[in-house]
Image (cartoon, rainbow, N blue to C red; front, side, top):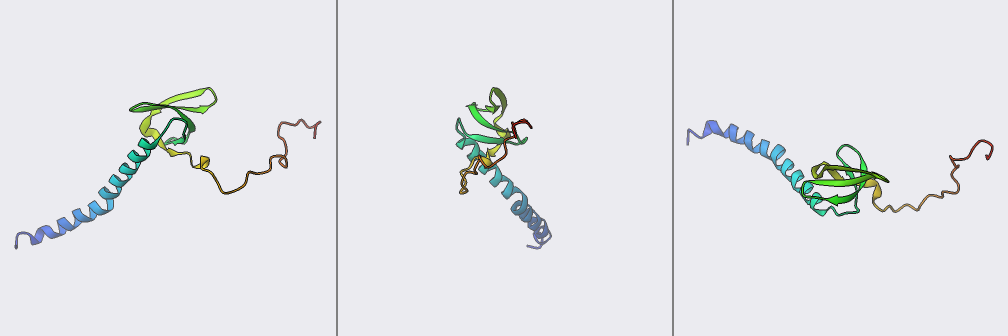
Length: 110
C-alpha cells in the first residue's frame, strides 16, 4: 500500500488529462464521423477552408463539390466541415426584393 501512495498524484493527473483532453477530442471525432456519414448528394456544405458549395459526388475518401455554376472541385471528404449554416430554413420572411435599389441600372436609368 505504501508503494501506491507516490503514484496517486500521477494517476490523478492522468485522470484529469483524460477528462479534459482525450474524452472531448474523441467525442468531436465521433460527431464528425456521424456528420460525414449523413452527407448526401445535393447537400449544401461548408469546407474547412471556408468554401461553400453543393455536393455532387461522394466517394469513400473524397467528394466533388460545385462552388459556382460550372466550377467543380474535388476535395478530401474530411475537409467538409459540415452543412452550410446559411442554407438552413429560417423563420424570417423573405425580404422584399422590389424595394431594394437595382445595382445593374445605369445612372441615366435612375
